[in-house]
Length: 144
Figure 1 (cartoon, rainbow, N blue to C red):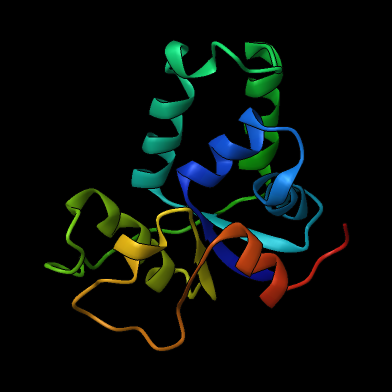
Figure 2 (cartoon, rainbow, N blue to C red):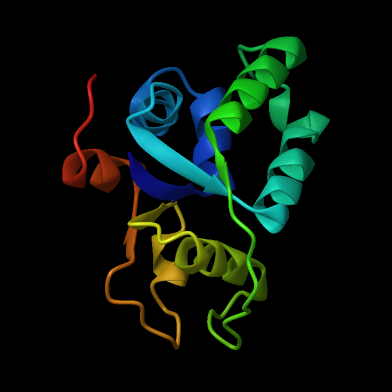
């Protein structure tokens, strides 16, 4: 399985919109085609954003179904402990945990809608790609 870090904006995007690349990435994780990595900081961020009631006002999924999907997603994640902080690195301090998780877990890519900020890091990790969901699906094809 291909190890990836799935940013919160991709997970949330998969729940807010019908179809689309974010949903295909999350489905590929659930199907075992990609191996999503998770650590303490990303888990806390997922929980925080998923609990924001204002965000889900227009959602097609009721809270119970979102919780079930999140539990299913967590069940396929590989827990990674991060022992080293790569600082200073990114312009937005809140994004550094994604790079640290990816490096600690030997991820092939971080899948995010925030490619511009994540690609502007001071430190370079040549084997780590920063990809949109669409780019991820193109670079690492999975079943539709």
